[in-house]
Image 1 (cartoon, rainbow, N blue to C red):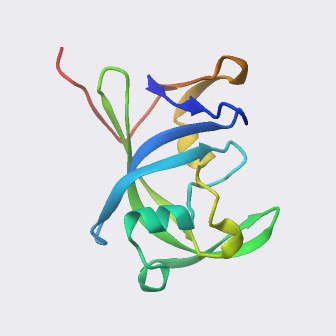
Image 2: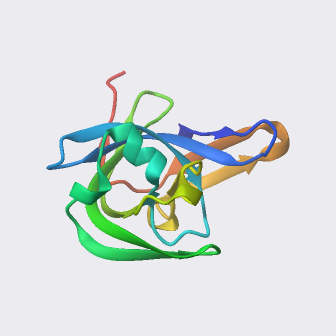
Length: 147
């Protein structure tokens, strides 16, 4: 079971993950907003800053992300995202993510965990109880802590 958190005022669901961008020597903990309406997982400018990545130097396939605010240029890059469960089990996912081009209006937004990863989990979310948890159905790799 992976535990998330719920914003105390907003009720917005978040989960912490460890993001590694192979070949870029960039990795670190990233807070993801859980977004069942996002088709793909997105790294926003706040995540770029956290990982010390300059978007202009980022290799990757050209991509774009459409949202209520319009279409934002992006780059599609290979990533490894891992999450720690209750028993210190590690759930690892290898996938491509979209890294959004920095724009002033995106600076305060967290990165988004999209349905491309969420389809591997079952979510239990109760904003009134400030509770968020995920049961893992599948992962690319599961490292179980010995009993």
